[in-house]
Length: 248
Image (cartoon, rainbow, N blue to C red):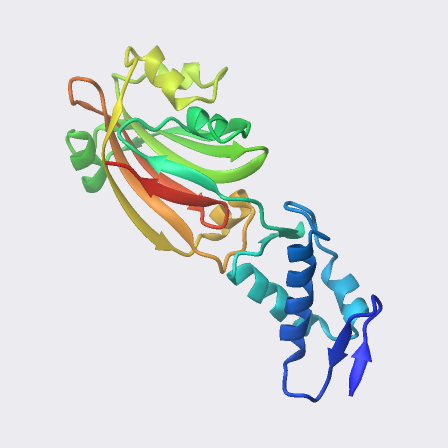
C-alpha cells in the first residue's frame, strides 16, 4: 500500500523499505534540490510526524541517519538544521583562530567561559616544562564562526609569567592578545596530537551538537621564539562543522 504524505510525497508501506529510510531520502532530496538551504532549520519532530503520518521514533531514526551522514546537524534544545560548509581548520606552525576564520570569509568571535588558577598535574607540568604542582592559569574559551560554535579550547599558561593574561582577557577574548600583554608577541605550535571521542554533556551543549556525535580533540603545545613553552591547549572541535588540515 502506498500512502501520500501531507506534501504529496508517497510513503510505500509494506514494500520492504523502512519508513525512516524513505523519510530520510525525501528530506535529503529537498536539501539536494535547494528547497532547504544551508543553515535552515528543519520542521520539528512533531511537524514531521504529522506530515508523514508516522510516530516520533520513526522520524527520529531518519534524522539520526541524516546527521550521521553529515547532511544535517542536531542541536540540543534547538532542533535540526541543514549542515553548512565545514571550516577548514589548518593546524600549522602558526595557527591563529581569527585569521583562519576570516580567511574563509566568515566572522570570528570568542567567548571566555571561565578563568581559573590551577596546580599543574604531571602531564601538564611536563608539557610546560615546570614542576608538578606549580600554578598555571587555565582559560576556557569558546570560538565561533558566523555565530556558530566550532571549537572549545582549554588554554594553560605558566605563572607568574602570564599573570597579566587574565586582565587582558577582560576586554579582549583573544589568546594571542593575552599572550602579547604578557610580553609574548609571537608564538608557534611545536606539536599536536589529534584524537576523537564522544563529548561530555557540557561540551555537547556548548558546541550545540548531539551527544552521540564524536568531537575531534587536538592537544597542542605552543612555544615562544626562544622555544619556551607558553601555552598547552586542549581544543575540542565540533566534527560536523570543522575538518582539521595538518600542515608541515
